[in-house]
Image (cartoon, rainbow, N blue to C red; front, side):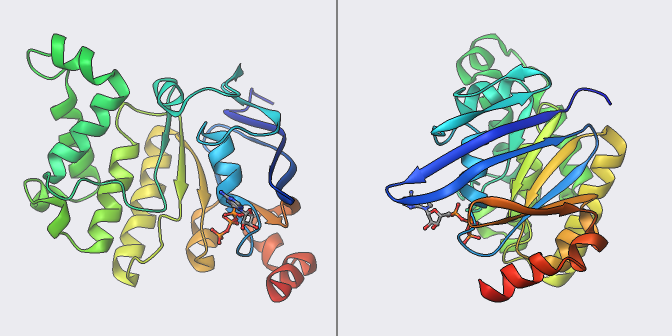
Length: 248
Ligand SMILES: Nc1ncnc2c1ncn2[C@@H]1O[C@H](COP(=O)(O)OP(=O)(O)OP(=O)(O)O)[C@@H](O)[C@H]1O
């Protein structure tokens, strides 16, 4: 099999006496949409933060496209082609949709460099315009992000993670708080992006219907450990998963 886009080995993280992540290992291959699910407190966010350089793990390794990135800062990971969305929205409310997405690209290129050497803007506006069209936000291009509906802001937030053509995108509860109509659109656009670009996704999500229909494979965490892994159909039928959710 080809080299994994993301390889996670024996990640461990405790907070005081709480073992939030307890030796988690998995690989994600090019083009996969991997769902990471589990009851509240099962360690999903902590694992994401360890992978993304937001929290130092107590042990373990993370590789992206064969390169060991353990301990690397989030901004450097971003430059290596790792995009992310946050559970909490990261849009700037007083900036337009277009400017928010451009800013996400400036962070990628290094804002000083793009300011110094971008007579135009190093192609960022054109790239942002493409993403705005792709996520069907063209009618909101110049609207202040703060005046959008929550669901629309989640779409902008998602678009921001795709600036600079990442090879891996980690999405933290993309469906959280999004209404049903917007949800269908979000899933359709993410699926289309994955199909067109072969981008690999890892998705944390509580909305089961969304995650089961979006993902090609699911990993289930409970109390910091992987208790099941398989296709959405296999996971739906897995007794250990059902028990973990009922007990949780
Ligand atoms: N900064 C922290 N300090 C202390 N304990 C923490 C911290 N962050 C997480 N924990 C604990 O670690 C465990 C795992 O939490 P985590 O947020 O990773 O789970 P989760 O699966 O993402 O939960 P949720 O689905 O509710 O977001 C929980 O027991 C939580 O209380």
